[in-house]
Length: 116
Length: 113
Image (cartoon, rainbow over the protein chains, first blue to last red):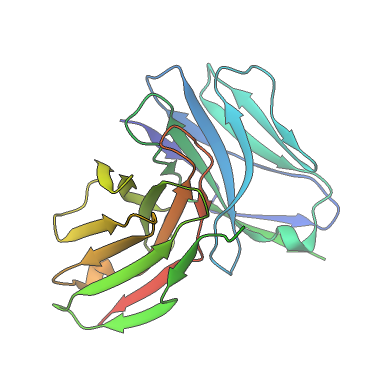
């Protein structure tokens, strides 16, 4: 069974600094997707960034980038130039492309605090 | 283009009662998934509907059931509510089953007392 593990329950960063959130996963599949979602107090899950497993190049979206290590099954999120609005719960998630559904398997989340 | 909307935003039910939660998918999306997010946890997949048929289910008992309507909106029904059913219930829609970009609603906070 596929699992996603986030070992950092809470992280803190100073405004304008850089922070890295960790995620590891377990799967026997070779074709899958990995995601980072942000959940602010409004509760709505917002997609931050997506990585296709078959792509070696790490995904980037403005201040957000990932370090995808397929062999190590590691998928970390780097937030550069942190802003107060980045404060939220961040979830790492996995989806197997070849399944009957596109269901997401989530980790337990990392609560990010941004200090002014 | 409207996003995913869920109703109600909050509700309180008594143990043993039944509840129906509603979700309007994003325009053009034919696939809807439901997730349960207990306090301090990541969301857990309940089931998915594609073109009005259930096409996948997580590890939830049969008292969790759903429907999808011709306009692709969806309902989640929970019978015989238990205290552990207290959670945030999230609905997510996507263009198709094979499309991995899911758009989430703001959730329904269910409290069972």
